[in-house]
Amino acid sequence: MNNGKVIRRLLWALPLTLFALMASQDVSAREPSASEAAKPNIIIIMADDLGYGDTSVYNGWVKTPRLERMASEGLTFTDFHANSSVCSPTRAAFMTGRYQQRVGIVDVIVGHRDTHGLSPEELTIPRLMKQDGYKTALFGKWHLGEPTEFNPIRHGFDEFIGYLIGAADYHNHRGSWYDGLEKKDQQGYTTHLITGNATRFIEEHKSRPFFLLVAHEAVHLPFQTPADTVENRKPIPKGKLWSRERIRPKYKIMLEEMDKGVGAILDTVNRCGLAENTFVFFFSDNGAIGAGSNQPLRGGKFSHYEGGHRVPAIAWWPGTITAGTVTNELTMAMDILPTVMDLANIRVPKERRLDGTSMKDLLLDRADFPDRQLFFGYEPKLGTAMRDRNWKTIVSSNHVELYDLDKDISETNNLVEKHPERANEMKEAISQWKKEVGSRTNRAAPLRGQ
Image (tube, rainbow, N blue to C red):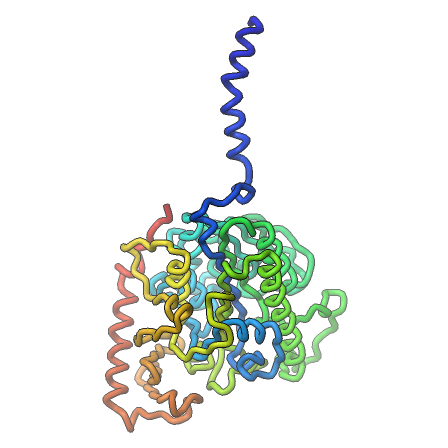
């Protein structure tokens, strides 16, 4: 082949080679467009089994100065609810903006119980945000399915580092820790690893809009502090495994470490100059177990009383959300998806029926939130609970309880006999709701992400 032909072929191939090289570069390295730059970053921080009466924000027994700072600079919710008093259902509702019954997850995902996981065809927050150009990541707990088909990567997360099951050792991650689809050990204390991965992600993607889910294991069992390394552990005396005296001091330290993590994330957002364009929301997936506190509420995890699902929640967005404010509006975890989509100006397909309501106007303008009936279904174990403004009912088989939370926040005075008409109306509403969310058309109509 003569030199002239060789040169012509090289010149012809050069543009394709340059294009391939440009396409292979990480999109986070390029300059964001004007529309991307205007989009807010979204960070959701989820605690695990944190009670309403645990943190000092809610006059609890553990001093949490970083959460106090977040509240002083943001909006504190007094009547925010997890969708369930257990983990997996709340996470399913939060991720989809729908009652967990519509996606078939009403119980904790353990082995073959209930369902194997959240269908990858469901429309989720990370999938919607990724489609709109956001970088997406989850660090920490998933608990919406262990098989590869249910992995967070299959749901629109660009990056996932954490564990798929309900709980894992805080120090020994061999066999439980994942980096994407592959098992990969990461040494360190779980709470510190989650925080470190989150702050690194923020720094790496500060020039582009991102969605970050920080799903802490704390304060879920096993009750292990940073000092409780494998080498330092001593046998637990017989009868002391569930001792409140043994667990409570560890629980306190675990919460304090998570609080430090929240502070580190806010500090990173500020240091990167992102505070005025970043929305951060903190909440718990359900109430506390016996080692924690749900005061002044009755019940806790695995309970339909308020202590099972009314949880701490704080919204933070300096310069946009009025600092040091409090709202008593009745809100729920499934409201987060429509809220985030509203804040990011992302359209949800009309065919997708959402049960949640956007909190945007409440967050930004302190507008009144619409009254509505909310349901907490955990059939058949606990029956179904319902909130209608200040009224609360619990229906399990033929047993009915009715409370006026304005006058009885601790749910001690059953008013069924005093207000039988109100009790019957709410019982009928529960019956109709169960028929709706349990129908085949509502449970078997996922939308595949484009």
